[in-house]
Image (cartoon, rainbow over all chains, first blue to last red; front, side, top):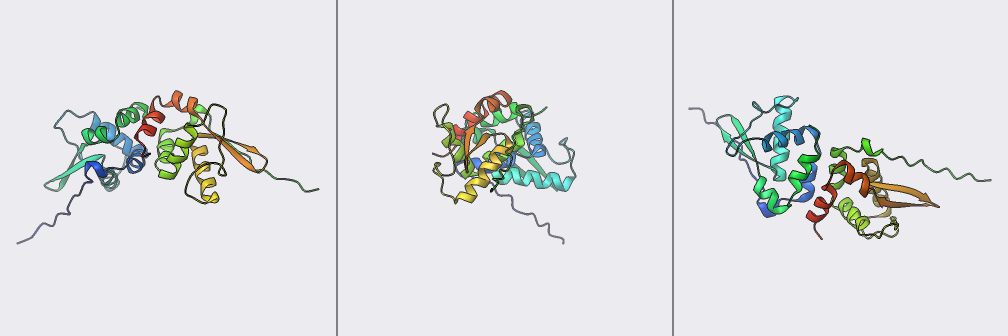
Length: 109
Length: 109
């Protein structure tokens, strides 16, 4: 019987989220656009590389989501073979008040 | 007679300052501390690698100031052999309202 091996998805705890890592994660235009798309979702909605509108290949998209997750910007969970992503808005707001909204306001549309 | 060759210092114009470059420049803890030090200066005061309090060598300090200048975060001018630095606070505020203060508030002290 085939066994599906799923890579464990780890997230920094809220207190471990570092400003430098968040700024670095947001400094890439594609990642910033991905974050803006996640920010525009309804509460409870999730996005994947299959559903998000960014001009990169799926593997590049997967890489960018990983950078965002490791920085603490997004949460990822497995569903089948997909990874579903949401913004860690409350955690970011608690750590760095106003930062996310200020950056998103400054981002090109 | 010896001729002193001075590397030209170029700065992006206000409209050329890009969010990604600014976020990248601020994502390094040492550069962020340098910016915080510049932000704490009185109007008209300037700082150099000789006067700023950061735990790096002079050549590393020089490199970090260059990254900040090229991103449009600081202005540099020559005075003798020194480079004197000031924050481009007005330009940053005009381009990305609230960003600098939000990042500085979020920075570790």
